[in-house]
Length: 143
Image 1 (tube, rainbow, N blue to C red):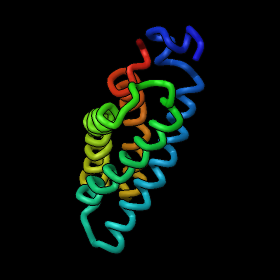
Image 2 (cartoon, rainbow, N blue to C red; image 1 turned 60 degrees about the vertical axis):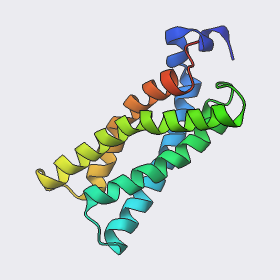
Image 3 (tube, rainbow, N blue to C red; image 1 turned 180 degrees about the vertical axis):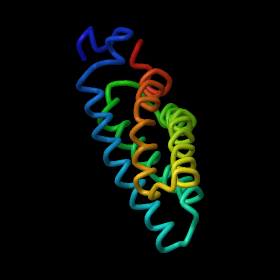
């Protein structure tokens, strides 16, 4: 890690890390879309309810990938620290997930938008919320 990647705002806007985060987010979106589609089409759940399950499945998948790749050089070693980061990541990503859930609900309920399109809009706009808070709160890249 270069000095610029490890200091304050420069660490937050590091292009390589953001690229990794977006790549992980793309995989998380695939997981999210697969689960929401399964829950709606096979499980006959309402899209808003299905989003809760699909978001958590994506959160777990993305945490594992971010831990091993995007933020591999950040965060203290040890099982306790790993579990704390996992819990914190779930709390932090809950903000982005709630945002995505709200977008999906509003667009499908009041805008008559197809649930998969609404899900994509929510995920896409929540990406920046998640990146900032994951970088600062979970892996503390600014230190």
